[in-house]
Length: 160
Length: 140
Image (cartoon, rainbow over all chains, first blue to last red; front, side, top):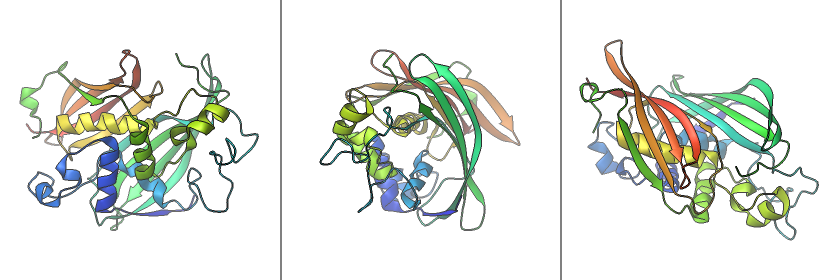
């Protein structure tokens, strides 16, 4: 898969922390952050996932002039899509070598990991796919490793 | 404030209410920040009429982010070295979530001190929505 360039920006770090409801000043107030142990604004732990914003091919982003499976005139712009809405996120693991800071320019490389299947009572056959992402900084140093497991269900997951 | 290994023991816990009455607006904010605009999370019409779910539901990564808020409040910002979760149940608008960390080990490695934590995030019915583990660097 192609490498993605992920510039880490202070405004993005702030919006991401807001979405989580995390108002720790270290995510939005440069002066307050300067007085903390980390010495400046850093990104919150799950921020690396926002690399999706910089993936030109990311499939879960609406684009002008292209079919989109969300609603408009009709309940879905893509007919005959399987129920269940596609994939769900099953697991996510991060390993951090240092915090991400505004001004970092990361290069992110994804590779496929293992694939496996399992039967489930609540959603039929489950297909799991693992994906590994390595985040390197402007000096080529590995800063974050992420392992993600996605699952495709045979039918929508029943509420247990 | 960072944790001190000398003041921790296996079995210690820390928990926080990380969201109360989760709103669809917060889920939409997470779409915008993360870049994941999957209609499953933001489009009630699509979700109920096409995808077969009773309502939109939160991104797993929003639940992980909320769990991470408890984690950084507990161990300190910039101290987490590993953080992983499995998403075990969906999170719906209106849910209240509590995230809890339990100390499972205290270790010294290369002169640095670390705490290993088991993580569990549960909803208002006591059902687990995410379970996982984390490691953080602590002071001696």
